[in-house]
Length: 245
Image (cartoon, rainbow, N blue to C red; front, side):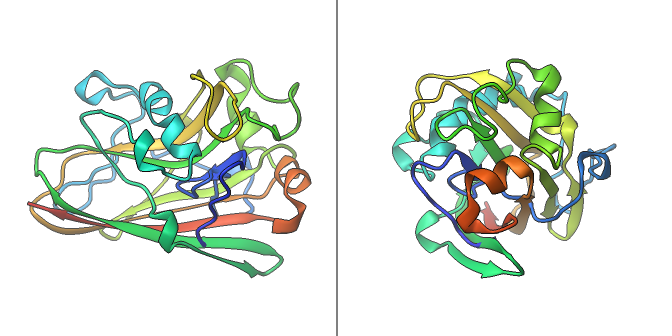
């Protein structure tokens, strides 16, 4: 995915940056499978089960903490104070291009001097209720019971092919890792007060150089209707280089 950073965009691709949360494919919710087990990367960086609460934080807590940062195009003034290193794209170095009838955003970032004791939080894609609301105000979920259908179904937002790859080890990230809708203070991308985030925690990594890649795509009817100029999909592919030690 190329870096797409519309400051007012409702969708954000994780750092797709503006969070039109990109993923990368056309699979429906039924074809997305949450990680059934911790997929350990050599030297740490394991994807933790979605119910884990490192440092007492849940995925829902981190969705709320990172919301202003995620929807702002990763503006440093909104970077949250938490025990985690949040992995995010440098929007100034992202690129966007038209491919195969859609739009792809690619980019990444480098993180240096990370402590071997540090855990990580990695948001993949988000959707919030700042205008334009995907599908309209009545479509946005009021609680978690309908959030997965709204987020993943192809006749709605249609997020698909969401994946995280840590040092070559791949984990599909499905509905079990979805948090929200979470209530927030008015968001900087248009004043919305609720956000849904697909994200994961990673365990600490051993000293040395590590690579974390995230992929995903928006391809549903609500997305295509709200952003016709982006084509049939918006995909993201971001690579983070982490230097530990």
